[in-house]
Length: 108
Length: 140
Image (cartoon, rainbow over all chains, first blue to last red; front, side, top):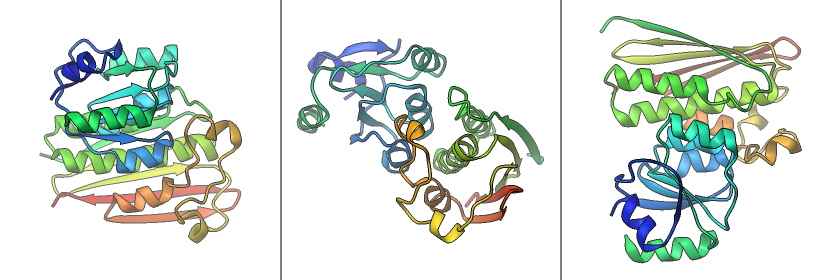
């Protein structure tokens, strides 16, 4: 399954990302950046409420498939710019991380 | 491939640029054709060290030396130094201030992550003078 399919099926809002055809291999939840960076796997969907520029940095370095901002957490303007420069896909949902992870686990 | 040397400056207290040096190094390693898992290891270790420079020191400099066999990265700052390296190496121990924690940092995973993702890690630190961390990751 790719990010495009995930976004369509779970009705996620696309905040950043032109090409959504990135394959998803797993999912990781967390807001502490160092924790996430060392444990999230390449190709994971990363569920977080951290929408700052440093989250984008972590997404790039950890090679996650996309960031999903849960509970409608806001994306900072400078974070959006950095994400656009680095082709990081960022989605948003009103659901919380638990609900989102539960839904994703049924799909992958 | 001949030896490649790269240099980056890290600004103090500038979280908008934090991660830029490690991001650039990551791209360079990718372009040089290194394996993705090796690139990831280097990127994570250098990112953590770079963030430490931004949080705890007044920025610093990063010098990377790249050969087909080994990536060596030296991160030097003129910050306050680390009083107890053994304690700082413990997972979960952090001295990051509250404003930094609200950005998602301060998990106390920085130095442990660096150790986890490198083959060799050497910390040379002196109170009031600064800290130099030397990392080696072998291309196996």
